[in-house]
Image (cartoon, rainbow, N blue to C red; front, side):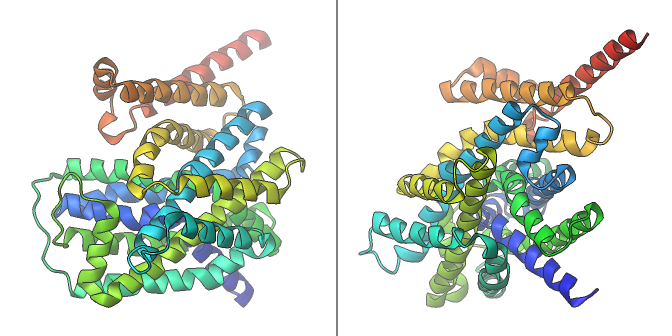
Length: 434
């Protein structure tokens, strides 16, 4: 392997890792470990599937259809795919992930050391830095991959190694079985938002690969896969370490335990007074890299969809302003309302990813994709509304469906609708030809 290719792979792989690894990725694994105890291994398998494997499939899905998420327009009507793209980036960006990044940075890295700095004042500083870096558009992947990620990764390694060596206790049997632990890990992995990260960040990654001279389909796919493996390896190590630290911590796993408090406690136990500093650096860089990447992606998407009528900088400014306002809430408040939103958006994105990867080269008709994804959206919306209003009837129906315990009760019905639509279209085509 030549030097240029090696540098491209490592830079792109580390950039992808940093883009994926944001606020939720840092605070959620210790929470899973704390809750699952000795069953954390099974929980990690579930978390790996929803938090690493499926997001990587989302990157591959976008790579297979073009350069960006909006290239799905080749398989869907433009208004349909544009609405889907806007829904995804708005939910993923200024509604949930970017404000969560700002709020997490404040609660972990700023408030304990500088309580005199208010959350609003810090938010203004955080999003000003995010804005500045996001406007450095052409150098974004290199800035994240070469400079910000190494600081983030080293901070996390120090925390995990020292925390493991100074773990206050061994794994505790919380009375959780394999199936329950796997289900908890899989469903909690939704909160990382990484399936949405995959479809949104893939455009930045693939564009960077092309700019470095790897423009053929074979080259693009090879670099994407190898970079994804590097990113996945980093995520497996970091997630596994953080989950283990949560499982061996002496925090009392009560109902009201906060995500942030678990992380703070682990850092203090493992590194003493230095722990707070290490975790602050890790949080700051994890949140900043993700926020910058999302803001940049939103600017690029709105510029593309509007054919330049909405300049890149306008989208970047809008994302930063809305995120700043919402970041005033606590991390737990943001995670709470995010759960309902993700229960609607995640099934749509996962269904689309699986349809395109499994059938994209064989099924050319548009109808199965459109009807399959539309059905998934309506199906998910009904149960989200049911949960919001507290409908016991809808809850009972939902939990009676296959795979409901894994929060993917929509999966089999969605594939059934896709298959039926395909067969109906095929039969109609045969009748016309006859």
